Length: 133
Image (tube, rainbow, N blue to C red):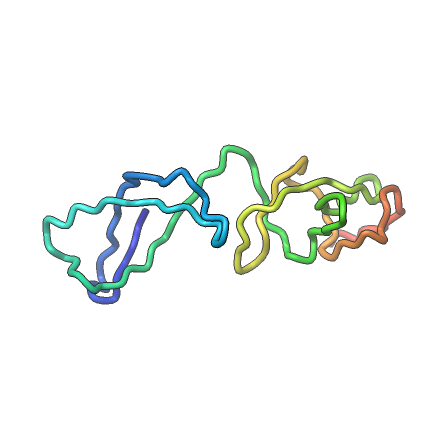
């Protein structure tokens, strides 16, 4: 993990993951991770606040789409993919919510055309004309 602090504004620090709790808190849906930092230069002092940048690597491919792309029905979550000018529902699982959209996992490929505003009313097989410019 990399982190900065306003008290030492010109330096980026890094720490190594030391321990994971291995338990998800059901109320907050979080897991405690502990990182260790060697502060032998005494750059960091008690009471300093840090801003951390956590870079995650996924074992499977994920995509980030606008929130309105994902349709949640009683049975499943899906996006509407356009294939041969027809709508098809592709089931997805949601990942991390981000500022610019939601991370999704599913049977999707780079280059797939998705409707940015999905709806249960658009049934699989519905003819859709896509004008790619």
